Image 1 (cartoon, helix red, strand yellow):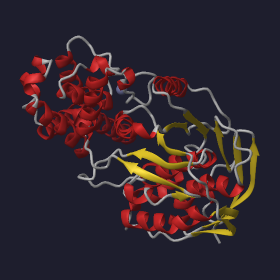
Image 2: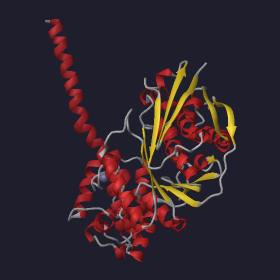
Image 3: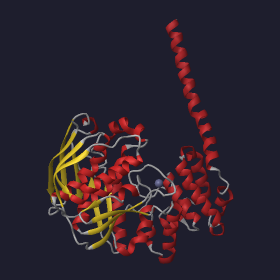
Length: 422
Ligand SMILES: [Zn+2]
C-alpha cells in the first residue's frame, strides 16, 4: 500500500509544522526530512486543527492522486474535504494521459463555519496579473497575501523575498490595506526531480507548474483567511481563456476550492495580457497613484529590464502610449536598440505562447500608433515577424553552436581510432 500519514501537527504561535511518514513505492518522491511548515505574520494558535490540516493535504493530494496513494489524517474541514473530488476531476480533465486515483482518508470531518467579517483577500506579488486584479477589486479592500515557499528545512534570508516584502508592505500602506505574509518550504519539501522523471512526459508538464503550485499557494493562505473570517480569496489568472493551456492554477481547479464558509475565485481569466496592461495604465492616468509600480521580475530585487518578462511588459506599456519608467522600469536611453538587441539574442527561445503575447502588444501598438512615444521603435517593430525571425535565429544558432561540437566530437573519435590502431 502507498500511504502518506500525517503523524504530527505542531502549532507554535504563528507557525505550523507537519511531520509525516511515507510507505510504499512513493518514498522516492520525498526528501528524508518529511517535513512541511508555514510561518505567518498572524498568531494561529487558536486555529482549529481541521483547518490547519488543509495546507498539508492540498500540497500532497495531486501526488497521491497520480500515484494512487492514500493520505491519512485525523481530521479535516468538511467544506475542503467535500471539494477534493471536484478538484481531482478538474485535474483529470486537464491531464487525460494520467489516471487520477488515490484518496484522502480522515477519521473525522469538522463542519467549520464563520460569518464573514471581510470581503476579500488577494494573492499579491505586485506583478501585472495581480495589479490588474487589484485595480478591479480594490473596493473590497482585500488583504494582500504574499508568500515565499522556497525555504529549505529552516527559514533562510533571501534578498529577493526581503525586497518583495518591502514592496508589498509599502503598497498596502499607500492603499490603506493589510498584508498577510507567509514563509514556507512547500516549494522544496518534495523530491521534485524524481516526480518529474516519472511523470513529466505523461503529464506533458512539470509537477510544480502543472499540478502543485496553484493548490500550494492558495491553501497556504486558508488558515489566515479562516482566522480573519475572509469570504473570498482571489488569485489573478496568468493565462487568458482564449489560450487554453495546462496549468495548476486554472479556473476549473481554483474556483472549486472551498474552506469553512470561504471560497476562492480565479480572477481576470477574461483579460489578455495587453488588456491587463491597459487596466494598469488607465488607472495610473486617472489617479497618478504611485501604486502603478509593477514588479514583474521574480529572480531580481527590482525589474532588470533585460529578461523576457521585463521586456515584454515594457513593450506592453509602450503600446498603451506610456513611458515604462513611470511603472518601475528603469529603461536604457535608446529603447529601440535595447529591444532590437534583446530580440537578436533571445528570439530563438520564444515559445508559441510568448510570440502570441508579444503580438498582442504589437497589435495594440499599431492601433495606438499616434500615441507611441518611441518613434524609432515604430519604424521596425510593426513589421517584425516573430515566427520567421525565430526560425532564422535558430538555424544560425545551430550552425554556430552545434557544428563546432560535432566537429570536436568527430575529431576526438578519429584521434581515438588513430591511437587505437597505432
Ligand atoms: Zn527582468
